[in-house]
Image (cartoon, rainbow, N blue to C red):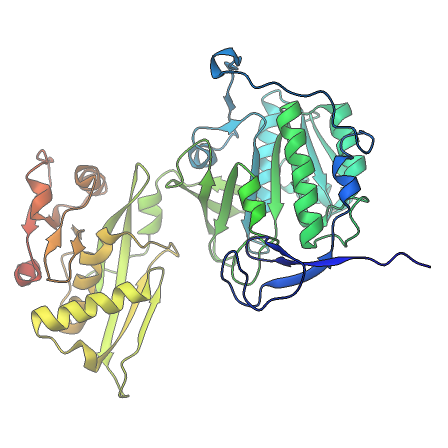
Length: 458
């Protein structure tokens, strides 16, 4: 008789395992996320990197940090300053980095270019593809000017073959495109399933820590925008990067949501061209490109991404509603925050915002939820409501409280200096910030304390 395959249920959000199906995951409390999959073979857990079942190898003894040898060459560059910034200064040897994004956004493109840059700098690189043939990769490589002999390619999905090749070749950098196509014969599940993704990632992770190979994993995303597979996959890797942006537009934004070796507040901005992705050296100029002049509802504000100030254009359109319930629609920012700010305007300034629809847009396709954008959103709404444009050479930033007060924001001086560098001549900012700032040449500072003083801005 054929052996009956035992199945268990995994949560597609957090990876929690259950012997039976439940409507709500008891770990992460998400609904309808339990997926049935074959249970992993417990005897195969010890079979790893050529080991026999039941053999775990020599026991490792705990050691103090003072006895650990530190490698002087801790990081190496990707060849992209923007990607190095997001990673915290470069790639850490032996780390595992997961890159996610929508189909066609440029995940394979940027990693193929990164592999070429690393190979051109003298490193051995292995690009493993489970989705394309060697001919297809060569066609794409010709467009991206990939020519280094140190960059080698392997089209394979069997993890046993891949691990054996990695142990023989010993590259400094390996790219897996994509992790959902890889499978292990020891796991009785189809490629891309929760069990396979978790097991294959675990094997590659241990290989990275033992051999010092750095792995880039490309991960597919779900319709919600999260990396497909259990959320435990994101917990296993050292860094998680997301590619954002409209696939039909030229810009791409690379954002870090997890990084064990650096900050998660940095972003990288790229432009998609015919010969691949190129870095945007001046993001503020890029994001303000095409801004209308003397247009009501258009305001320039400044947001901070880590240590980098970014000038953004906030656009607002306010019109009288035709229904009993006003419509609120936002692109690039939090709709709940916009509704709260409009309630503050109505309560503290006496303007009947409940009778008007409001549409808010952050131009350039970038997404921001920093509280420093509050004052810019309020001024954009009032500018559209009054049909009165704001000086095009003026920027605004500040947090708005429920009492209508304008609260201080961090790194105000860096924001003002960035605006002055871009040609702006005046800045509306919280009065609490101006007391701790040095004068900026060519910039007139306009401090305000509450929304009651906002009439002087127009």
